[in-house]
Amino acid sequence: MFAMTRTLAESRVAVRRTDPTLSWGIGAHPGRADALAQWDRGECQRQLEHTFLVGEVGLDRQGSKETQRNVFRTVLEVTAEAGVLLSIHSTGRHGDVLDLLRQFPQRGAILHWFTAEAPFVERARDLHCFFSVNAAMTDEQLLRIPPDRMLPETDFPSSRRRTRATRPGDIMHLEQRLSGLLAKPADQIRASWYRNLGNLAEQAGASERLSPQLSVAIDIARGHSA
Image (cartoon, rainbow, N blue to C red; front, side, top):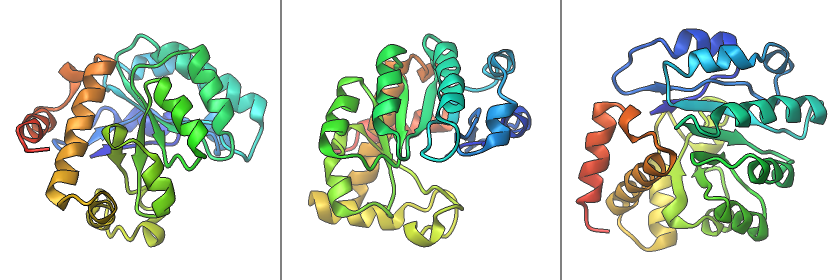
């Protein structure tokens, strides 16, 4: 599982953990004024020595757009050539997020809970973005996402009632939803997510930094019938 943090204070502790099945991200949540206020480029660069994951970062409809853009721009400058994956928040500001991703291209961008209309999805795909989806999204929103760019998320605990996740990483309901929508068995849906993650990690130059357990899971999925 990938676990996101909301502030540099949280990630300073989290990224030094050695949980065998958890990878921790470096966060500066755009909806948190304290996260934006404490953002520091040098601190982010130091923390990147301990993780390949950045998140949750991005823009949000609430709060100062200028402050959010300044922080997110700095994040993108740091990560552009760092060989990392980024979980990107874009609620209410999808176009602005994509504009910044065009200005500061990223090889490991994952758009978290991306509910924008189809033209924005196409723009994001052209920018080589992947998308993390959850069971709170509508069928229409899920079907907009290209299956070869899709990854699962729970947004736990914030949205556990809407996603029906009982714990972090509980994607059973999402698997069942997509199994019906895409007319594929649930085990094939899960295998495709691991393959997608492997492809994203290769695109980002982060494959060598994945945990051994995760690398094995990706290899097994790649041997699974599509």
